Amino acid sequence: MKRDLLRKIVSHAIVFLCAAAVLLALIPLALVLFYVVSQGLSSLNWAFFTHMPTPVGEPGGGMANAIVGSLIVTGLGAVLAIPIGLMAGIYASEYRGSRLAAAVRFAADTLNGVPSIVVGVFAFGIAVVPFQRFSAIAGGVALGIMMLPLVTRTTEELLLLVPPSLREGALALGATRARAVFTVVVPAALPGILTGILLALARVAGETAPLLFTAFNNRYFTTDLRQPMATLTVQVYYYANSAYPDWQRQAWAGALVLVAMVLTCSVLARFATARMERMQRGA
Image (cartoon, rainbow, N blue to C red):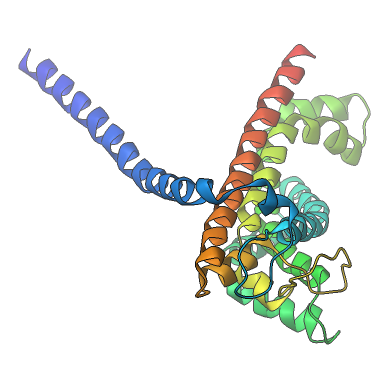
């Protein structure tokens, strides 16, 4: 009887400690979100999204060029990273025992741990120095390099979770290995893969250091990929370090927009996953 009572006490204590640990982990996130929202919400207005930055020292203006620039540069990174990452992940999953697959896995894990500023310096050396100019393309290269290991490892791990019976059934029906992978295995893992891609986009959307070395900044609106381009993270960095209260106010507004973008990617990832899983169950 005493032994059962002791087990219940220990069980409740462990549950309580786990719940306390979860709450402690959420406290910093809640504080950051509360502070950014409280500081940035009052600074948001329609002009922030539609107007260009004002000259130094003048109040007003907005970050329309930086918002559009962030979408363009992040999109360029996705165009570079997603196809390569998907193919590398598929290869690492299908040929898991080969030396090349092990090398791909090791390279992805190593690259995932490289500091973002080092990625920025590398992109500066291969995409800025040879062309003697900062550009949006160089910024996309830097962000694409950062996305690549995330997409690769997510794709590989999710493909390994697909039941082998699906692949074996496709092969038994006469499908080639490539057709079995692309018509059976990949669609089965697609909800998780899509979630990983969206989370990788959210991860690189808030990077500043790589863009300081590549896309640099531009106080004017431009869609020319060969020219320097403003991004929200870099604009927030410059505004936050300025001595002008109005620019500091806009920096908080920009930080809030960045948080909203990351949150949107996370919500879309969960929504897409849930919807595709319902579609697969219905099929």
